Length: 383
Ligand code: AMP
Image (cartoon, rainbow, N blue to C red):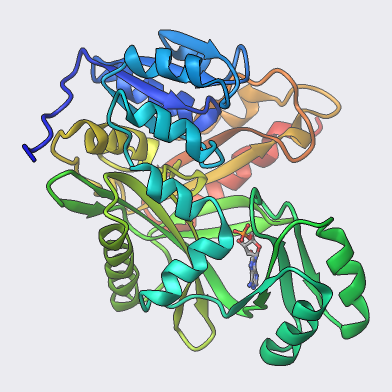
C-alpha cells in the first residue's frame, strides 16, 4: 500500500464530537490554516461555535455521516463514545485517525483493561461482572475495598461506586442497573499522573512532560507539570505510553492515565484516544499545545516540541458551581497577568459541568499551582 499523503493546511478536518476538546482542536487547526467541520447531535456547541461548519445530526444517521465524511480530508474524534458504526461508515470515505479499532478498545473499560493485561502492560487487577455471583467471586479473589464501574460510557467517576464491605455488595450490584460491570481492586495510590503521547503515520512518537493530576469528587481539579516524581519514573511512564501507542498503532493522540502506587509502581488506570483535560496546561505552558499536536499527528505534519516554556505549568478547572449564585469575577482572576482564561462557550452552568479552565506558566511547579489556584479562588471571593 502506498504511504498515506500528508493532509496539508487548507484542507478540511472533520471532528466527531463537539465539546470543549473539539473547540480547542478547531482553534488550533484554524491557526494552522485548516478548515473544520464538526459533527454531533448538539447545536451551538463549544466546537461548533468556532468551526466552519457545524453538522447537527445523530451519530446513528449513516447518510449524514457519509455526507460529512465526503466533505473532509481526514476525520478525528474528540469524544470516544461515538458508536463504532459511525467511524466505520466515515472510514469508507476518509481516513479516520486514530483508526476505529482504537476507539472500539478504549470506549469500553473491560476491552481496554483486557487489551492492556494481555499485552503485559501493568494495570489494576479487575474482573468482569455480569451477575451478583461474579461480584462475590471477584471480592474473594481481589479483596475489599474495590470499585465497581459500569463497563461502558463512564467518565469523571460517573457510574462508579466504592465497595467497602461485603454488606454493601448487593446495593452496588443493583446500581449497575443491568449493565455489564467491572470490579477493580482499590488502589491506595500515592499520586495520579497522565502521559499524552502523539504518533504519526510513520511511527514518530513524542510525549508531553508527565502531568500530575488532583481530583475532587472524581473530577479533575488541578494539573501541574512536570509531575513531582523521580525522572527515572517519568521516563518509565513515557516508555509505557510509547508501548501502548505502538501496540494500538495509534495515529493521533492517546492519553494514558496512571496511578503511582506507594511502592513507586506504575499502574494504568485508563486510556483516552484523544486530547485530555490534564493536557490543557500545554496551551500556555508548552511550545506546542496538545491540540496543535493532534492536528499535526493526524495530518502527517512533523510533530511539534513538547518542551515547557517555563520550569513549571499548572491548570485549574472551572466547574459550573463557580457560576452560582452569579457569574465569576473574571477581572479579579486575571489580576495576575500571567494567568490565562479559557472558556468553552457553554451557556448553561450546571454543578460539575466543565465550563472552562485557567492556566499559568511560572518559575516553578509550586508557584504555578499556588498562583492558578489563587486566581480561581478570586473568582468567587466576596468583597
Ligand atoms: P476513572 O473514571 O476510571 O478514570 O476514575 C476516576 C477517578 O476515580 C480516578 O482518577 C481515581 O481518582 C479514582 N479511581 C478510579 N479507579 C480507581 C481504583 N481502582 N482505585 C482507586 N481509585 C480509583
